[in-house]
Image (cartoon, rainbow, N blue to C red):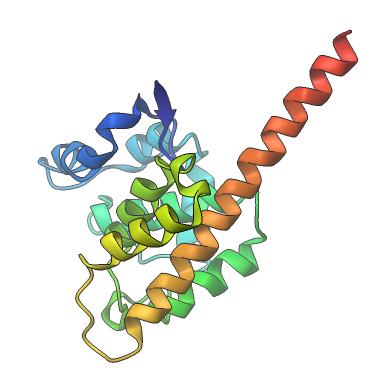
Length: 185
């Protein structure tokens, strides 16, 4: 069954969710993505991405090329912009990454955070079971190396917020579909 990667227009089989890092890494073999490629991948208008850079939501591209880390920050923001306010999204990201326009204070690379979240989001149906949810969260967090005591808890908190918002959005979409069916009948 196909699944749309959060924050992108890409669809892939759910069983390929574990290969996301590999799939994304191949996109960066040429040294980064230009703005038009980022826009095509995300479905965002180029001026939106430029505005986010200008507003300090991410570091500026180097030689007009975006890194995987920058792309994943964009994907993290894009995945939640219709669910949470920009203020809330940025607050959540600042909780784990300090100043958004300075990567040096990050406690987790944005690409790692995105891949952890997206991997869990791909399994959202299975995670409705509380035990499976906790088991999966522990497995994902096992990949995270904590450099300062307490950082793991911050990453876990943000992942839980991301999954809750994602699940809520999916429920809202389902309700909208159900309402559409009622209106057609």
